[in-house]
Amino acid sequence: MDVLSDAVAAVRIGRPSSNRVRVSGSWCARLAPYEGAGFHVVLQGTCWLLPDGGTPVALGTGDAVLLPHGTGHVLADSPADAAAVRRAVPFEDWAGAEAPDDRTAFGGVELLCGKYRLDRGRAHPLMAELPVAVHLPNRVGSHPELRSAIDLLGRELDARRPGSGTVLPGLLDLLFVYLIRSWMAEGSTGAWPAVLTDPVTAAALRALHAAPAAAWTNDRLATEVGVSRPTLARRFTGLVGRAPMAYLTWWRLTLAATLLRDTEEPLAAVARRVGYGTPYALSHAFKREFGATPGRFRAELRDRPGPTA
View 1 (tube, helix red, strand yellow):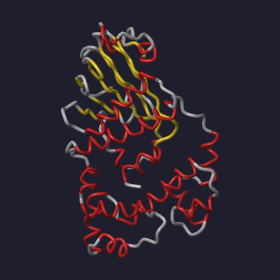
View 2: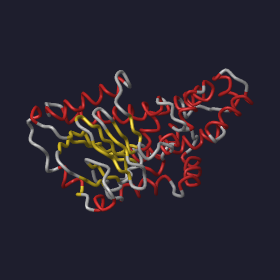
View 3: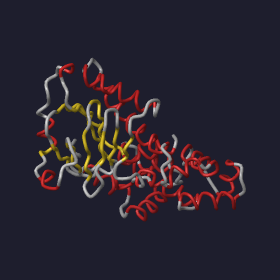
View 4: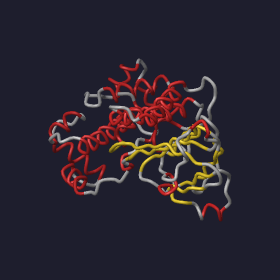
């Protein structure tokens, strides 16, 4: 697994959802804050996104926007004033009043909207540093994988062909990764795009994520990357914000939490998969990091009500 894939897998839970919305005339709809991430793709027309406490974003045909922290926001036909925002219709009510299906006669706005369930308790710093809204304007030849995923997703939602129940979640997962990847490729000033383009740090992270249970030491990792130990320590710590072995410990425990959440594997098996020699050693480190033993952590997850879509 690469770092981005691991970062997404650590926080993603449940199944994503999406729908097409078509609206015309004057409109203003509010989406409440959400324990996850949301996205919108403008398939036709123009509209505005007004994130809570943020700067309004003008959206045109082909634009995509990701709200990675589930920020509450308003979608509207124009940059609505405060009074109009307060009168905004809840998205769930508004989305049910769609325009007719005759696309050739439709002159309004068509949106592809969706959301992902995310567990923010163990968010990777790559995910945590994403801005409130990731706006990716449509440009010819820009981000071909993202555009292909959008096209495929739109067709699946149109047709509802056999197997769409399997295809749609996979396409939505692809879209999520492509949105983040495209943001990173846009020359973002965040720390993690720099981390993953630095040859030394990126190579070290790939090694740690590929084999988290290996008996890593600073010397072994430096040899794997092909640099001296001081060079590895300086580059890695300066960019990531943690020393290599401190990052590895954090990632092992985050991975253990993900396995406890998503599998029924016994604690001994989880300990082996994340590089701890005994369940006791894992339990001690896990409680120090998360404030609960692995057994209590798993039990509390089972008792917690499932997230709503």
